[in-house]
Image 1 (spheres, rainbow, N blue to C red):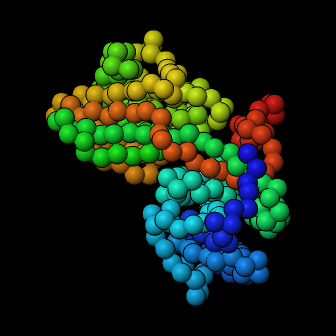
Image 2: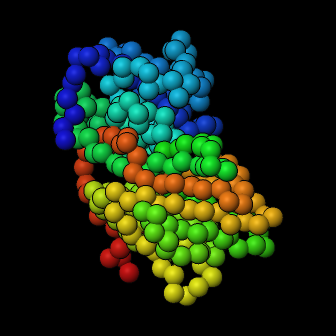
Length: 293
């Protein structure tokens, strides 16, 4: 889908940065100059503010309330995950600029930043939609918290010496009790993250599915499970006296108690990534060194 120049969005952008990246001192001021020259209004998150004198500072979670044309993320995949969760509800496109090694999500290297911005100005960019997973935490029958993740939800053990026990249901049908170090529910985007390291399947971003991947499972017959994203995945935590922990995109989360329930389904929201060149398989070949043996 081509990105259109919607007048209702005006010329407003946001910049979100990875904290304490030394490269920002050189990139930030020049990027602001480019936006000013092209008549953009700019807001920045607190992490960017040290390199953006005189620019409005806005917490990331408040950016979704602004009529932004897009958000520039300066950092890596982790920074982009956090930024995506902040703006997904508003449908604001995200441009990932990588300040380190090539990421699966941050596809634009610094030396191509301004040619990429010119492409956006000339409406030569594409918007790629990525599905998210919505998770509701229930304790003693009452909703406790809700999250939307672009990559994954992980239920992990709270103590090193203990296995994590979880009962898993798909559409209210019992699947199995898993005894694992962790249990991952991943989106297609998240299939190349922690799930991949745990032996999970690689899914193209356009696949309408979710994957359930156990980590160091205590049974040789348990394997990753791929289900339609129309399914509801229910995880019942069985910790006894121990404590488990649930994490969202590896960044936020909360402790879990015995009997807590996690219900996962496809989110009502999508993350819109600005895309320019190459394919998903180009990234896989580069990141995973396919064909280079």
